[in-house]
Structure formats: C-alpha cells, structure tokens
Amino acid sequence: MDLVVRTFISLTLLLGAVVAQAKGSDSVKTASQDPQQAQAGKHAAALKPSFAHLHTPPKGMPVMPMPKDYKPTEAMFALGQRLFHDGILSKDQKVTCASCHLAANGFAHPDKLPPGVDGKRALRHAPSLFNRGYGTLQRWDGSSASIEAFVLEPIEDPNEMGLKLSDAIARLRADESYQKAFADAFASEPDPQTLRRSLATFVRGIVTGNAPYDRFLLGEVGEMTPQQRHGQWIFESKGACWKCHTPPLFTDEAFHNTGIGVRDGKPEPGRKDATKDDADNGKWKTPTLRSIRLTAPYMHDGSLATLEDVVAFYVRGGNANSHLDRRVQKLDLSKDDQEALIAFLRSL
Ligand code: HEC
Ligand code: HEC
Image 1 (spheres, rainbow, N blue to C red):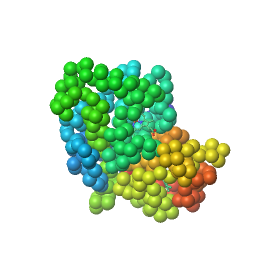
Image 2 (cartoon, helix red, strand yellow; image 1 turned 90 degrees about the vertical axis):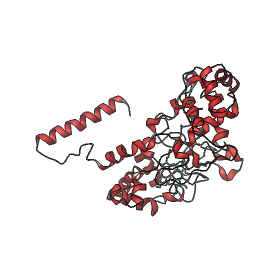
Image 3 (cartoon, rainbow, N blue to C red; image 1 turned 45 degrees about the vertical axis):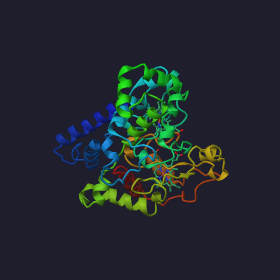
C-alpha cells in the first residue's frame, strides 16, 4: 500500500472514531478491539527467523527435515543471517537477499516483480520464504532440486544480484571478519559449499506457525472468530482449497495449473520448462498459505493484488486453458462465504 492510501485510510479511521465518539456511540472498533488485528499483533513475535525452529518447530508445525550430508549449526545460521542482509553478494553492493525477501512482507516483496541490479527486475514474483525448509524443490517451477542447490543462483542471476560466484567468494575471502565467521562456522575458508550451507541454514530458520489456527486446533477455542471458523469450513468443503493447500503446511509442494499466466487461452510453460513433459504445461508450485496476509501481491507473476482478488479468481473457476486442473472449478460461494474464507486465510 502506498503512503497516500495508507494515510487516507488512517485519516478515515480516525475521522470515523471521532464522529462515533461525538455521537456517544461505541460501535467503532479500535485496533485493539478488532480480533483480527489483535491476532496479527500476537502472531508477529513468532515470525522472527531462528535457529531454534530447526529443532523445536512452533505450534502446529511438523519436525523439520534435515540435510543428509551436513549438520546445520547455530554458527552457520548466524553467518547465513549476516550474508542474507549484506550487499557483498551483489554486483552493485546494494541488492541483498533481504531487499527482495522483506521480513515485513513475510519474506516476499510488495512489487509484482522485485528490483535487482542495474534497474532490472526479477522475472517472477519473489515468493515468501516461510517454511521453505519443509519443501524440497525450489522456485515456482520447481527447477531447483533443494535449498542448497538454489541459494547461490540469485547471486549469478543477471536480473537479481548480477555477480559471478567466483567474485563473491573472492570478496568474502578478502574480508577479515568474514574469514573469521566462516572459520568459526565451518573451520574452513569461504567457498561455494560453505556459502551455500550457511545461506541454506538461515533460510531453514525462516518459519511461521503458532498462528490463531494452530492454537485453535490445540484447544484454545477463542483464538479463531466464528467467521474464521466458517471460512475454514468453506476451505475444507465446497471451496476444495485443501486439496492443494494441504494442512498443516497449506501446500502439497506439488505443481498445478490454475490458469494464472494464461494469455489467449495459452498457459506459460511453468513446470513444463523443467520437466519437458507436456502434462506439466502451465503448472506452478502450490505456495504455502501460511502468513499469507503479509505477502501480497500473489501468484508467480504477482498478478493478483489482494486476497479478495485471489478468492474472486477461484470463485470464477480460475483461467480457462488447455491444461486447467480438474480441481479448479467455478465455486458457489455467497458474499458471506467469500468474506469468511478471506478471514480464515488471515488466521494462518
Ligand atoms: C532481485 C530479487 C531477489 C534477490 C536479490 C533474491 N531473491 Fe530469492 N527469489 C526471488 C524470486 C523472483 C524468486 C522466484 C524465482 C523463480 O521461481 O524462478 C526467488 C526464490 C527464492 C527461493 C525459493 C522459494 C520457493 O518457494 O521456491 C529461495 C529459498 C530464495 N529465493 C532465497 C534467496 C536468497 C538466500 C537470496 C540471496 C542469496 C535471494 N533469494 C535473493 C527474488 C530474489
Ligand atoms: C489445483 C490445486 C489448487 C487448488 C484447488 C487451490 N489452489 Fe491456490 N494455488 C495453487 C497454485 C498452483 C498456486 C500458484 C499459482 C501461480 O502462481 O501460478 C496457488 C496460489 C494461491 C494463492 C497465492 C499464494 C501466494 O503466495 O502467491 C492463494 C492465496 C491461494 N492459492 C488460495 C487458494 C484458495 C483460497 C483456494 C480455494 C478456493 C485455492 N487456493 C485452491 C493451487 C491450488
């Protein structure tokens, strides 16, 4: 939301509150009385990346699978956290992992396509990094086999960080404090292997859970509003959302064609580019819906601006094309059902 819109909304709210008070009415909800605002505030603390998540997942999250060939440590996490926020890995020293994956936006980016070096834009929307440690294939089309395989790719990507990997390693080796940090974490010099392991360990620590939904399931029945519970029922029944956004991670980590990116009835290849199988035409990885309230805009091309737009997209049955998934069909949802579904998404 840009500043003008935000200011306008705050002013409108303020004005509403003043008018309501002048009338002696108590019907206007302040932020602290609004159950969804209060939920978001309570949840925020649980969203900080932490090494502890690798061993003690937050409420509602399964145990995180570990890489087979090394044991992540706290020193690797700390080093990865520093690298994630450091321009040393980009050509102009300004673009960082964090400048495309912003904590305030759920480690996604508020632009459709996030900005890289030399005024360029990445080719796809920056996805949230929440809970990527639970997934194997990375990228919207799954073309990267693991987090370890993926994390060095943005460095060399000409639209993203635009730096040769060998130059990135040379810069790190020339920096005394990085030499020490790599020695502490790996007892070795900066090299592609230690760089990828430190970044991957930090990404694994970006976890979200312990949401109102999780606490509700664990018996704290006041944590979800009746509207959100109605929305959960829609999600699990006539909405059919759970078939791909499967709890508790709210993704099946598989690939489906919902019609996003279709032009003139033709899908963008998506997963097909990676597998060369025509059955994968127009398929993209199901993203998690965890903390989805933070990560607008949505979809691999950032083409849907709000959760309202997303729900409207599914209600009309996605975008028709030659390979549309059978599970994406027109939905018979009333206005109340749609609002409840959105309220439910905000509880995740
Ligand atoms: C210029 C913006 C930009 C920068 C810089 C950037 N990313 Fe990304 N990131 C993206 C985009 C766009 C994608 C989706 C790419 C795709 O699907 O092809 C992505 C995807 C990812 C994924 C896979 C997520 C998934 O759901 O499959 C991970 C993990 C990730 N980035 C971590 C990092 C790390 C670590 C760095 C720093 C070394 C970094 N990113 C730097 C934009 C960026
Ligand atoms: C057939 C599987 C499938 C079904 C059913 C499905 N989705 Fe999705 N969903 C996906 C895929 C795949 C994407 C990513 C599409 C893309 O980016 O091209 C997605 C994207 C989304 C996003 C955007 C996430 C992000 O981070 O950008 C939201 C929100 C969402 N779906 C909500 C829902 C809701 C609500 C329902 C039920 C009404 C639903 N989905 C039903 C597969 C599915």
